[in-house]
Every structure is written in C-alpha cells, then in structure tokens.
Length: 264
Image 1 (spheres, rainbow, N blue to C red):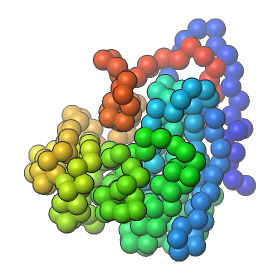
Image 2: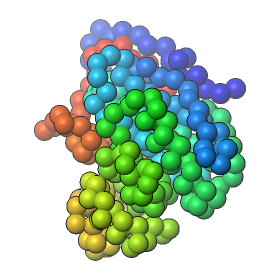
Image 3: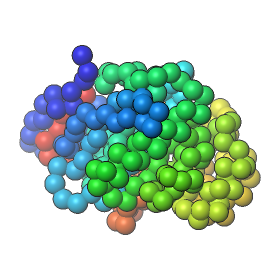
Image 4: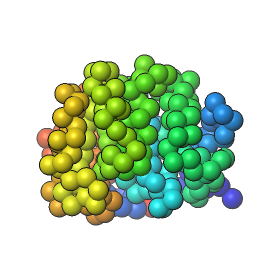
C-alpha cells in the first residue's frame, strides 16, 4: 500500500524542541502522479505551506536509483519535512522511471539518464500546471546530471529560474551541457563536499568555470551523501538562501520548532 502523507499525527508541544532527522513540521501534503510524454506514470509527493504564499518551489531530482537513490533520499525527505513550515517553500519529490519507494513504483525502467529527460519535463510541467511559483531544479548526484542535461534547454528552461546541484559527479553531463547553462544565464549553485567520492571542490571549480554565473561552494567535512544533521541542515540553508528573497537568515533556518510536530 502506498504511504499516505496525511497519516502523520501532529501533536502540540509545551515548549520548543530541537528539529531532528525524524521531525516532521506541519504542511499540506498530498500524493501526486503525473504522466510523461512517452506515457510513463510517475509517483511523488507535493508538500506545500499550510498557509501563506509559496515563496519558491523545489523540483527535486534524486540520486542514482540503481544505487539506492529515490524520492525519499534523506536530504529531500528533510526538505519536505521542514521547508514548507520554515521558509514557505513547496517541495515536489518524485520517483523517476522504474524507481521504487514507500510511495510506490513509477512506471518504466532506468534509462541511464536518457529517457529520464521526459521525467524532468513532466515534473516541471506538473509544477507549472499547479500554479507553483519561482520554480527551481534541485539535483543530487545523478539528479544533477538530469538538471544539467535538460534544465537549460526547452521546454524546461523557460519554466524554471535556475538550479541547485548537490554533489555533482559530472559523469553524464558534459561541457556541452555546461555551456548551455552558461548561455542561458540562469543561476546555478553547486554544493561540493570536501570529501566527495567523484568530484571535489577544486576540480569542481575548474570544471564549472565555463559557467560564469555558477557559484561553486565547497563544504568542509562533508561527503557525497551529506550524512549527518550538520550537513543536511547546511544544504537546506544554502537552498533557501538561493531560491527565496528572505533567505535562511544570518544564522540559518531555525533549529528548533515551537508548534505542532510529528515524527516520521
């Protein structure tokens, strides 16, 4: 049975508590699905602020499904748990073709980033049709390849503001795609762990130098999977700084919450 995000049970607190990996903050959450141009039905979840305007929309592209990546990969799960409440940010997570999670399994099979072009286009189209504003691609590992390969070309380019990349390996994405981003002029933030398995900060700065508007940020101590609350929180701060006018604040997003909470 597909996981129902409405099943979270929220309870009031007598005093503020620390936001932990399993903390779920209030949001309007719903299971969603959308169909690609080649007929694949993709499954996902949309988390919106309970009230107030949507300040930005994240369209998340998960790590490699053949190595455990899916819509619930921990940084994206934490984004959906926190950002609607803390920053008014909508978070769209979904399984690319052939990928499974507790939400269910999307149609199709893994296609090495080629057929996944239709997945990116369908996710962006869904966000547009739902009227979600200020849309950004957020790619992690394999997801960065999809963002780089398809985010700066039509029909996606006209429908997004820019992209944030987490741990880009630059395996499938080439200098051709980087030059397309350069020509688009769209913002590109690249978060690179100091101890990444594939591309470390100095080499990332060199590779992304062909994109004048790219901002490459090396994160001391971090690894490819951003394991540890310290690093996941840093990623969310950087994303909110990039995609919202207010940003995460001088001290980053709040690390405590005084309202209703649930536990995942």
